[in-house]
Amino acid sequence: MALVESFLLDHTKVKAPYVRLAGTEQHEKGSVLQKYDLRFLQPNHDSIPTSAIHTLEHLLATYLRDELEGIVDISPMGCRTGFYMIIWNEHEPKDVAAALTTVLKKVIETEHIPAVSALECGNYRDHSLFAAQEYAKLVVEAGLSDDPFRSLTAETV
Image 1 (spheres, rainbow, N blue to C red):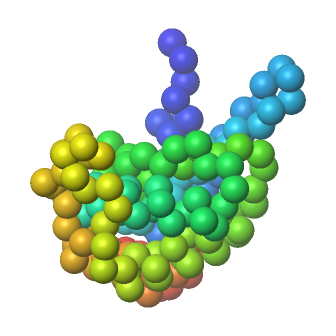
Image 2: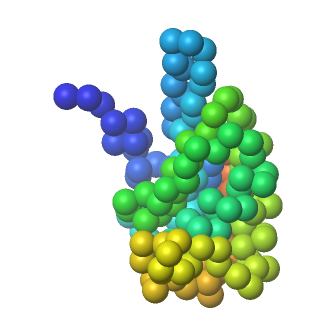
């Protein structure tokens, strides 16, 4: 049975919000992929509603590509406490945290959700810009740590 990296993480000890390098894979020809854990909420304490996480997915997928080169995918976690990001080449967690903070500030200010027609989205009716912005505000106000076991504030989100 294969080990799943995220199942090995002690979810009772992490302190959200944070950015965590969850793994690096190197192809035999030298290409490198990294998987990042972009955690918005404290595991097992809260979760992002479906419409908010769906909207955040669209906004992050669009805006993070302007900040970081080589993004392959950004997907919501099944537990709805954050996202996984797959990216080519090696990046430092502090750089990913800075880019994500910049993007979340854009999310707070945006008036438009990209790709929300039936043609572009498989569940185009299930979005909430307001809710996405509220969760973005929570993360920006708390500050994104690049250490999953150290919070930038006294309280976790």
